[in-house]
Image (cartoon, rainbow, N blue to C red; front, side, top):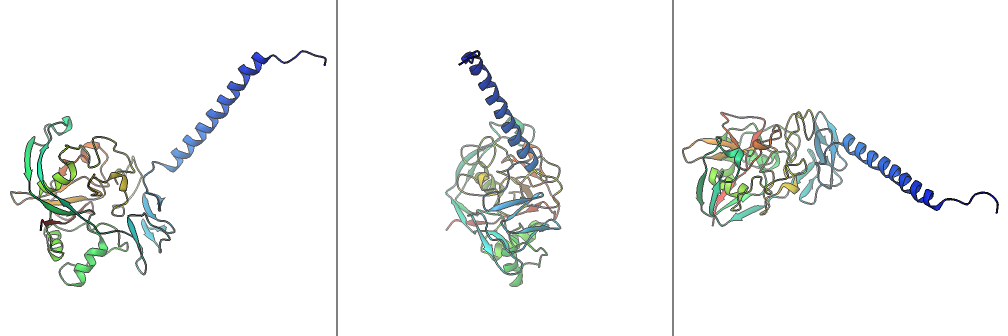
Length: 293
C-alpha cells in the first residue's frame, strides 16, 4: 500500500470528540423537549392539557376535561355517562393518634406559628378531598345545596365551613379538627411536607398552576388525587395544594389548611401552613373526618 498509514493516536483523539458532540446534541434535544413540555405533573394514565391533567382520551374545552376517558390513573375509576371523567377511589384512613410536635424544626415556621406539642386521639380521615360526585349524593338527598360543575372528580369548593360540616355529617362524619389534620399531614416524624422533609415538585402537589412554576393560566383546581407521588405515608392525597381544606379549631374558628393550586412559595404548602378565610372561595374545599369506632 502506498501513502501514509493512519495515525492511531489522532483517531483516538478525534472519535471521543465526535462522540461528545453527538452526546451534547442529544442532551440539548432532550432538554429542549422537556422545556417545551413543561414540568412533569400528571400521573400515568392521564395526559397534560394546558394547565390541567385529564384522563387519557379526554379533551380540554374551556378549561374542563370533557369526554369519556379511555384510561385513568390506577388510583381512579372511569365514570361513564354524562358527565364523565376520572374519579378517585374512596378510601378511609385510620389513625391511632399520638403526640406530635409542631414548628420545632422548621425555621420558616418561626414567627408564623407558635411551636407546640399536641396529643391527638384516634380518628379516621378520608384519603381524598370531597368530590363533586360525592357531594351530589348529598344534594340529591336534600342535605346539601346543589353545586354546578361538569367534572365529577373535581374537588368541591366555594362552600362555607358550615356547608362542609353539613355534608360531612350526611356521610356520618365531620370536619377534622386542626390538630387531627396536622397529625395526618406532619406525622410523628414532623414532616415539613405531607410526603416528607423536602421535594416540592409539580408531580407531588397541584400548586403553581396560575402563574407558574407548574403551569400557567388555570382558573381552578385539578382532579382530586391526581398527584399520587405526594401522598403521605398513610396514603392521604392532596394535603398540600389543589384546594386548601377547612378545619375546625378548638376556639370555634375555621381555618383553611394546606395551600392550594394558587400557591407558589414553599411556605404556603408546608404541613403547618394555613389561612384565615372568611367565606366561600374558589381555592378552598374540604375532606371529612370520623370518630374512631
